[in-house]
Image (cartoon, rainbow, N blue to C red; front, side):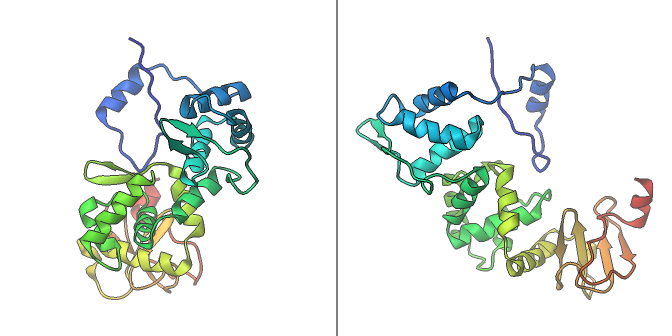
Length: 270
């Protein structure tokens, strides 16, 4: 029996053994860009054969450049905006779309999605974005927030799941699309970034990181700073993310790039 599987690889999410086995046995097929006719067929499978389908499909195809994922994202945007409505067993589509009814690209669509969530939800996904490849268990999400209220955390998680921003998987949540993290990183204010770095440092730092002073843990491409913003201190005390030792770094000029996330010994072996 033929079986089709679609998967987006991500470094922050470990691949399960069943998925690894599937990769070994499966034949990969690269999906080509959809033609205008194929985009219309895709939208018809979503909304049905309803009035103004061809008009809306033409605009979606123009913006998506044949990408099936972007087509579906733009179709969902119509639903989220209330432009596509479901009533009495069928969909109704707008008779016309102006330039502001649909985002210009996937980046704009994802930005509009994250901008619609509450402040509690936004704080949580900003923190998870900065955590990067360091997965934070759901039970520790409370420590990522300023309010420290479990009820508000779970309400935010429900909201983020409903908005298709986070996906629950066992003891952790993962971003539904990696592009969401890139969008959040680009628009995150410096003040919030510094505050969340400090919380993440306290949460992710190994026990050896309890020394006094400005202890800084760097994890490329982002840095987690404790009691100080990254690159603001004149001397560094880095926790090696490879061997977990602590090795002092030489003075770093203010505003310079963060040193690599490994000690001198590890760096010499690379």
